[in-house]
Amino acid sequence: MKLLSFRLAGRETWGAVKGDAVVDLGAVTGLATLADFIASPRWAERDALLAAATPVAPLAGLDYLPPIPRPEKIVCAVRNYMDHHQEVIAAGMHRELSEEPPIFLRVWRSQVAHGKPIVRPQVSDSLDWEAELAVIIGKEGRCIPEARAYEHVAGYSAYNDGSIREWQFHAKQIASGKNFESTGGFGPWMVTADEIEPGRQLKIETRINGEVLQSGHTGHMIFSIPKLIAYASTIFTLVPGDVIITGTPAGVGWSRKPPRFMKPGDVCEVQIEGIGTLVNPIVQQA
Image (cartoon, rainbow, N blue to C red; front, side, top):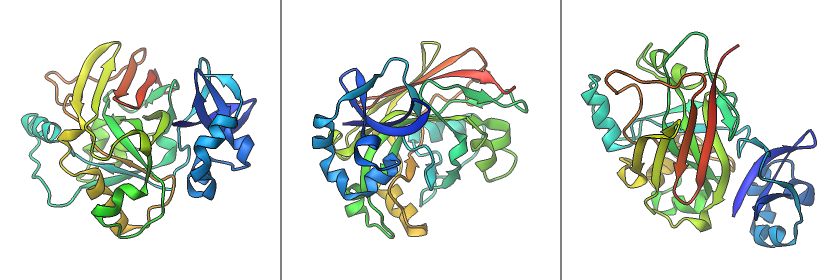
């Protein structure tokens, strides 16, 4: 099942894809957000709710929101693909492999929905792409063991961890380059976990104006999804609607010779097998 958030008649709601249209499950259930639904007992009724609901709008022209518009936490893994780790070293930045997952946090205002523009800020020309698999948490937990981690997954989505590179390199921490407003594409929807077998290797690709610039698969992760969930949940309680961004494969713009970045007028597509394609045009900050 594909679940999504969107605006309809001027209000924010959420629902599911049904054919080439959407159903408004927010109106059906009375639950305000998709995160509320994930956390509610009605989550178990999702198939029946979809079957009974009547489509309210076509997918074409839909006013998308990020699948989880305002997550409590967006936890991002750093250099979590071996090929990306190697390209960072080849580009001249020495980085040791760590024994535990390096992570940082994004804020929700840094996200943009499918079809909405990623904004290159006035202070930088180095807006880079990073195609990533997003994991949406479905069940609250603290100190979750790896063996039970998939029980806490509600679903998966596509993410573009847009990065302002020189701001990322201002200090040893990288969060400043990862949190510019409207730089992180997220969507178009969340595919429920029952559609994707745990541990399945998913092809992941980035295209700029149709040109393939990243092509890999999730089997190249250094730290697995269960490891990321276990590690993050040791630090803080994970709650329904939290998002874990799992890292990017090789092929980012910064490591190229010469470097290449997204610019106004470009269109960036992030495609993940079994999920779909996230599309964002690039614009300049006004």
